Length: 416
Length: 96
Image 1 (cartoon, rainbow over the protein chains, first blue to last red):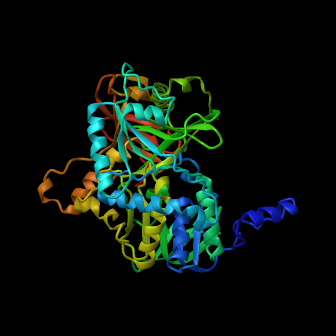
Image 2: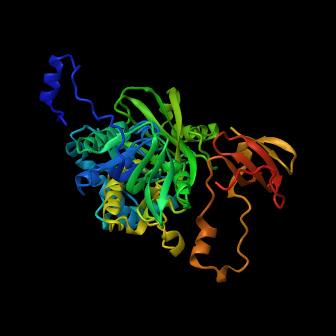
């Protein structure tokens, strides 16, 4: 892999940028791999990358039915934070945030990670009690955060309406300065490039149609391009996790639902942080390109259509216009939906299964993007060593039978 | 936007009048105390999540406020039938 640098930019300019190295190869699948990762989104690519870098397992294939990073990785609103309430979840998301902080350097790929801070607004007394409890819990876990007043919120985001006589007045917020956003595509591409350089095969346009097992252990995957042998199969297929699990005769406690988002026309810089509100249910940030990235809710019913209900957008935009009256004149450009696999306790499943050599990383629901590096890191460790990584141990599928749920509905809050 | 036929009101109404209540035809165990952890967890948390035909319960929450069942395709969102709780669906789509 040729490294990107100021020098490489200069030298490629001399040949009119026509001789850049391909970012990844287009290999023909081998007969058998040590690990096949099903799903070429951010989490799957991160898993492959850490298998190669941390665990030295390079005989790996990532099998993707569409193109790399074309599913939920391309559809989220790129918000990153780690202010989760419970110790288990906080550790997982904080691991991810720490990896984010060094990711561009590690991957030699600019993921445009911008620590512009995240505000989670409170609109009533109970919101504020919850926010104070969560911020205190975060600080005990070594995660930055503070409770801020409406005046401080106004300093951070001057366009916001903190008037006390609106329908849902803002009483305060939690503020995580280390949170922010990143470029979603770059994350997938950076991981793919890094993994490819170490010999991981990216197999695109190949849909897994079955998981072949023998004596209770996996032996490979059936795909639309033939059988691919595998000693271990790691499934990271988000909204389609239930479908993939059924191929191995397994059931998962997830339900797939479309989550929507939309972007406005590009406008001049007006919001240099991320604002989220559980109570009025909306969140907004401004991309480097200038468009307002607005997050809408998840549909109330199951669905695999990558679109969402119209009235959900309507509710979200009501919330955004309530928070930022100036945005009421901004025109919306595009709207889309991604299928997320929601778990009963709003926490992911990172787990071995009853089938030997088959692993699942799913159930990230509405907030998986922020966890991409951490998810890949602990899942790669789980797959490589055939036991849960210590941070992933509370997130096994067994918790739905033991009752040891990690209820993060509060911190997961607004579907994002 | 779904247009849902309420079998109690005998009318097509907009989806905003309804609320979703999850998978249909789940009966509460008659003796919860005798269930194993697996069976109880299964009852509480494990739901069918098919890509295709799904039987699900809806409530006409701002209308007649009664529950009923819907057979819907979760990929095309086509509603194939609605029927009252207690009756069986005419359309079924296999197990997954």
